[in-house]
Image (cartoon, rainbow, N blue to C red; front, side, top):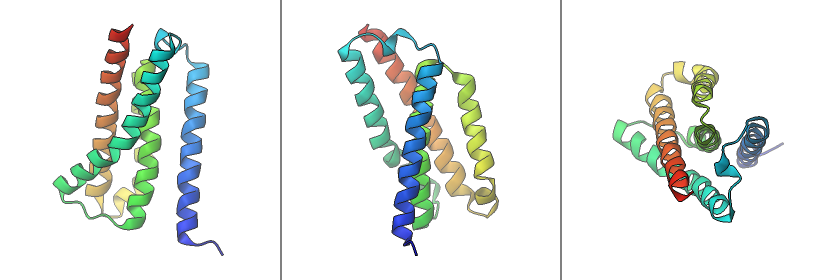
Length: 152
């Protein structure tokens, strides 16, 4: 029998793997702007940008949840963190690619998947967390795109 901690780690690992595969497919299938093919400085800035977003988004979402007064259980928080990090990577990639229509699809798909959780009664946690994470990732992505454009 598999323990809860092990299951949670597997879910997080699977989520990160799915995110990485999704980004790879998006970058391969989409005609990427010059920002992805310039020089070592742009590539390092891009890598640092992804790392900083993933590292800071949890703090922004946690602050938003505290401000909204949301009650969060530990299992919900673990799942939310894993989903949030995947969402960060997808939103940043789509923003840098200029695929703004796809951003709406990501948010809609997440809402559909989380419908049962939202209808369970803890709407403050799910809606506040989702909107805060999407907004932060989008604003961050636009800012990073500007930084990369100015550096060229």
